Image (cartoon, rainbow, N blue to C red; front, side, top):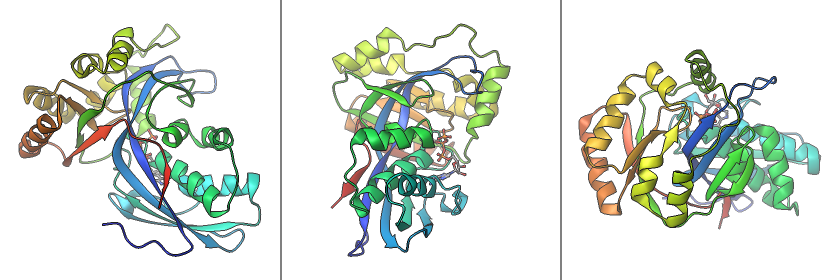
Length: 306
Ligand code: ATP
């Protein structure tokens, strides 16, 4: 149940993302890896409330899944987002944020980025800023590669560092089963190992036509077969149990499986809601992941909840 909203507050719900494809090019001179990715927003949400605070006062409290792992100082992405928005458009404002997390921290699901996007939407509403989506997207891109997608949601192709988005032609609603890892994986560590293992030498990275065609047709079986993540071998090397998790889900009838982003969350595609229920029960019983959750996608990006 959702707690009562303070009368002066704004509540925003923001989804996690999975990457249906993640193709990674060799590092650029600035250290970032050029990406070709397909983001997909799923119905696993963090909840953020923004309440008024005196000018210049920016605070955050965090509860829920992995709350103890989330910084509450100025490094919190939601605080960074609120400060940046105030700097640009509302210098006389402050905000008190509270986040209820359901997205596991360092899970490859862009939970921190989601909170950053939620803070932008919540503060823009709280401060009655009349901003275009493009203006929020510009700030989002400064905050991090995955923040713009958390604003728009749906299914989208990301390029550059992932921040340049084009909506994907996609049909259908997909049923996902998520296996959460016992502990997070550090994104820089996974990219580091990816480079050590040889990475990719020939830019630019591209997403396979098979995957885009499957999305266009709304063909879950074809989508399951074309899920693809260049970072998966590095994530499996750092966390060998993920191999067992992937194999178990496929043995239990998943149409496809992929490590999301830098992991360790594994996303399984099921053929129907009932298949997803069966798969999640079977996977839970294996006892090889922290917990199992079902979700559907695509869902919309960060939105004020009334
Ligand atoms: P990335 O977005 O880097 O791929 P991820 O999706 O695997 O990462 P996140 O949940 O975004 O993982 O957490 C990455 C790190 O970001 C955490 O270890 C945490 O220290 C930091 N962080 C900052 N703000 C937040 C936030 N609001 N929620 C979660 N983590 C945050």
